Every structure is written in structure tokens, then in C-alpha cells.
Image (cartoon, rainbow, N blue to C red; front, side):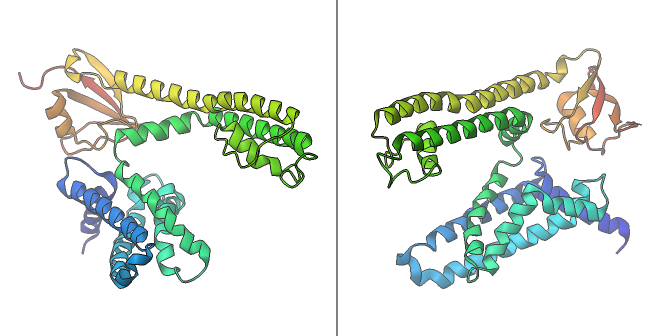
Length: 323
């Protein structure tokens, strides 16, 4: 088999398992298949915890073996095509980057517990990680992109708010220990004993299993409860503002291309619906001429089979194609 044929097969496999192009039927079918396998696998894991269904253990085990086999094949294919996912890296570097990525780690932790179910308890607990596979359901939709983009862009503000929560938590735990230790030595044995109380109070849960009995302790509990409302509101407000910003950007980016009547530029970001679309698909759908594509440091003259990539800058003209 020639290298060109191998590269073509590799590209086709990558398109099917990685991109999830809605216009590509095999890719869409693969997405549905993987989602179904994920749900079946998680359902089997849940059913296996019922003592009443212990008689079906062999059936559950066989189904789990098949689903994990599918995960293993998918994992191997993703490693094999990693150089297409990270085209600027060497083959080895791209594969290592995938192995260290969120998807790569989740895929590995999904497979490992199956082979160590009778071993260390930590591997049996890793079965919970399979639930993270459900992120694949939304992986190619705008909703999950908006969420991840907001968390990444607002990470500094979120970390700052978490730091404030930790400081208030430690301060309230020390304060409640000082106020309640003599009255409840068996409950508040040391400063760390107040951490559980401070977390449940500041986060406005208040389970009631640990509570102050002294006047000073009750006053501190009131103050902590009020502070907790504000503490919870800080990261909530940051994330809410981030969502508003993202949806505003999306509203302005989703312009009506047919309204263009002159030359303009379109930046293809990671959330753009133009990404991975061919030039012919673009021109037929939006009736817009692409004059040139600015890609990295190159100026590319487009052809019908060329695909639009992330970070491309499209120089377009709003003339009607069919005149």
C-alpha cells in the first residue's frame, strides 16, 4: 500500500472519529454509535451494583467486555491520528500531547478499571470516570464550547473567588473553634474540626449535624451565613457575565453573509460553524465568494475541495455567485 493511500485512509478515519461533521453520514453514525456504547457501558456498571441482579453477572460482564473493547479501539485510533489533530507537531509529540489531554486521560481511565476490577480499590473507583465520557455527547455542539470558553477566559477571576472562599473558610473555622471548644470539646476538638462546619455554613447548606451553642458561636454562624450568600454569588456572577459576553460575541459573529455587499474579513474561531467546511460547501450555502485565505503566514488561493480551518482569515466579497 502506497504512502498516499495510507495517508488518505488515516485522514478519513480522523474525519470520522474526531470531527463529527454533520454533513458526513459515517461521522454522524459513529458519533451516535459511541454515545450508545457509553450509555450501555454506564448502565451495565450501575445494574451490576444491584444484588438482585447478581444472576446476570456473566451477561453484564460480557456486555462490559464488548463496550470496553470499543473504547480500546477508539483510543488506539485517536492516538494513531493525533498528528492530524495537532498538525504543527511531530507525530510523537502530537501523540504525547493527546495522551496528556483531557480526552486522552479520560479515555485511559475509562479502560483501566476493567482490567483491575479485582485489584486495588483505587482502580475499581476509577469506574466513576466513565461518566465523564458523557461529555462526548455534547463535544461537538456550541453549548459545551461556550461553557469551556467561559471557564478558560474567566479562570483568573474564578481562582480569585475560590481563594476568597478558602480564606473565609479558614477564618470561620478558627473562629468557631475558639468560641465553641470549651462548650463542645467533643465536637470541636481542634481548629480543623471547624472546617466541615464552615464549609456547610459558608456554602449555605447547613446540614445541622454540627452547630454552635454559645452566644458568640451563634453570632459567628449568622455572620458566616450572610457572608456565604455573597461568597457563592461571586463566582456565579463571574460565570454569568462570561456567558453573556460569549453569547453577545456569537450574536455578532453569526452575521447574515448574504447581506455583505463589499470585501470583508471573516475570522474562523474555534466556535465557528465554518470550521472544516469545504470551499464549495461554503459558497453554495452562503452565496459568497472567497477571494483568498490567510492561513498562518501564507496567503492561500482557495479551491473547491479545500477545507476551512480554525484561525483562518477569509477575505470574502458579497457578490452573488449566481447572476
